[in-house]
Amino acid sequence: MSYPCRTHRRVRTPIAGRDDAAHTLLLATDRGAYECAVVACVDASRLPLTMFIFDGRSDLDDALELGVEAVIAAAASADSPLAAIFLGSSRTSGELGPSPTDERRWVRMAERCADAGVELLDWLLIREGTVCSVAEGLEPGPCW
Image 1 (tube, helix red, strand yellow):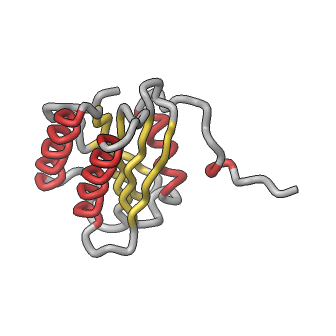
Image 2 (cartoon, one colour):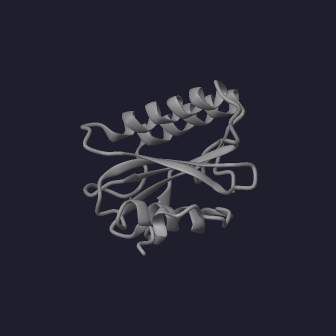
């Protein structure tokens, strides 16, 4: 009998904080070796609902922002258990830390999520197994 791999089973453990989110994103991006953008959705108990992974695009951060918009729109049009999202960007080159463009994008996405009643928990940048937060030190900051 075949079983789904551990990362593709419905997880019944909440994403309790940044460490859990980082672990989840490291799995999804092969520890940052796989260049992509991730929108991860959780319910009010922070139990995982789904994860959208965008790759193969020239500007993954634009795809990330469009993904946030799409998730918010879908949740608004249905009786959705979506309560919060967290984001990840795997970057295989350049500096790991957030750029001023990342910081502006964070504020814009956080405001859009707040307007829709969805909590934006954090945006984590990943490179070679290392993780840092775009939201750390910004207003609004991470919501863990």
